[in-house]
Length: 378
Image 1 (cartoon, rainbow, N blue to C red):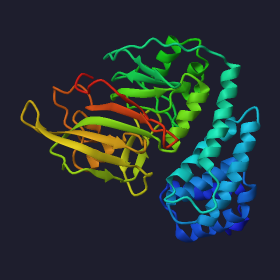
Image 2: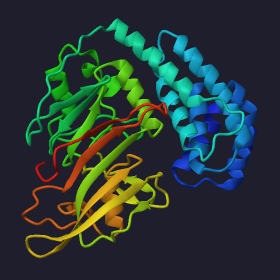
Image 3: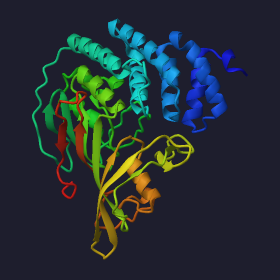
Image 4: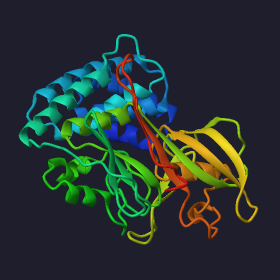
């Protein structure tokens, strides 16, 4: 079939599917790019964002297409910002901002799509906050092995302590939520702040903007208002959030800093409810980036070689650190799922979310940085 015979949705779905499956045939993508360029001025936000995301992931220079996409995106985002409701345009706004962030270079003549998305989301969040007025005054707490706590509240952002064993069962827009039987962080927030509208809103992920694995301890960003929620989701989409982790892995990992970029593919259970989701490094996987920053070699209580590692991740795939280090031949201690040893002196997977940094959107502003309690204590 000729690409010109596809309607807008069929065209965008086809391009998105081929890129998602890591099968972007050049001939098909060239035809799709040419057709999308002709239609860009009239595409709706959903189809426009899918096409922008797909071609940004492929990372091939298609400057005329991205200029056309940017001009249409700014018109749509401005229109959404002026409407009373923009729920259908929320995810497209994030996808468009992400696409223009990951491009290797901004096309000459392109409009500033991330800035337009920021204005759109800010206005919508402000309207919701005005509708559901709420005075937020949290009591700060300390980390605990059994109970969450608010560690910090600044500039509309709350840093929440998540103990090991607690679930963050919300969708982050990239992957669907995976439910399990552990205590839920969003339930704790709802009980702790029963008058906070966003803490009871599943559409807005209860204000939680990212996830941690069940056995991982550390910090999670939570937004107590809609305006801060949309701002934080945009910060993640435009890669202005740095997440650093501390982990212990089997063997002596090479000590030189480097970037692990193997694509990660999610593996679903053979039957619904038949087991937990896992991931693997695959040529068919989605873009994933894990930076090895520091490595210290040590011996465990039984004389086994282990490495204490500081990593920074730039994407948020399911089990990303665990999968990347296992693929390197150094799975995390306590992580039997991915081939790690499970000695008695490690009661869980040795992985701790140690630092969150929210980078400013202006070059002269200061970043917001928060270090969590020691991983050895957690």
